[in-house]
Image (cartoon, rainbow, N blue to C red; front, side):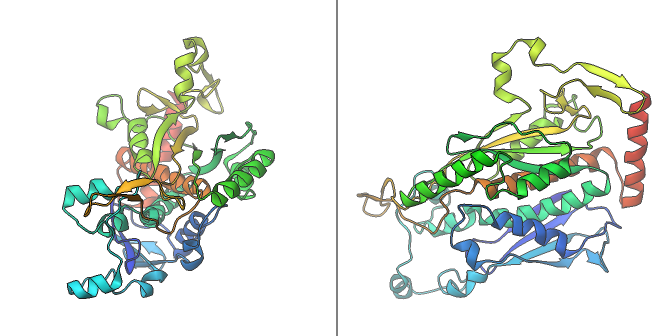
Length: 390
């Protein structure tokens, strides 16, 4: 599968075109909208989430609730577009009109794509950069991930995420018996954290950051259960699934680090406390005694749940802005301020879930070639049986 997104933060709409989805997949807008609603929730979100009520329109590739095998088009309208039609319109405007609007941006924000993108593409108005580099684009990436989740669910594969840390406040390790339980527990928390005590402290930290005009970051974790053994490959560097997942998570706006399993902790432990002992039984086949490697060995899945952590930096748009330089006058100024959140970690958890879901679903379709869902389901089922008997 592959997808392409288009659209700006304050443009008329966000669009995604997805290719390679098997035919006969049950797909309704409600499944996509549920994930879009989750992305907009979470403690610390700003006023933009009150304006937008994201709903997807499925414009192609689905007929009577089933995918046809043709490219699928998703569209999510920007409700705020009505206030930006002149500023963000495609039609040419005069210099006088531009000056009257006073919305030309010449003061780049530290930590954003503003200055780098302006230099790369030759823009004297950095709105051309920030409109596309905005995390608003993750709306349709989540829509694509929601589609991937539908595929995975049909194959017995479940995806869930939760928050491990916000603003330096770390959650205690809370056990759960299943992916469904993880989903329920995380959704019960406004910050999607399983540790109730830590959740309260996290919300307080978010409130304090907001009052100070500052922002805070954190760490999220995604778990994928029911994955077949052998997704990915040890043969070539660019076919290793853990490498693809790391790249995908790093591509999320403001994400600056990725860990698989225990990640960096492995550097501080002896091998006997890092690698997972192999065991076998008639019911489950091959499993691991522990899961410190996060479901991967040699760039391939080993049948254990995948565990992927992502680090998101604090949002760089601050209401007490850092110092910057005006690109026209070259004088020092406070950086520009755009509407933003004080913390987007709970929402980032949802984005990370769906980005991971896409990569896993894509890996499944690379390993099991099929244009029809029933045949794909049969292939995956037979593979599970073969690996158990190997």
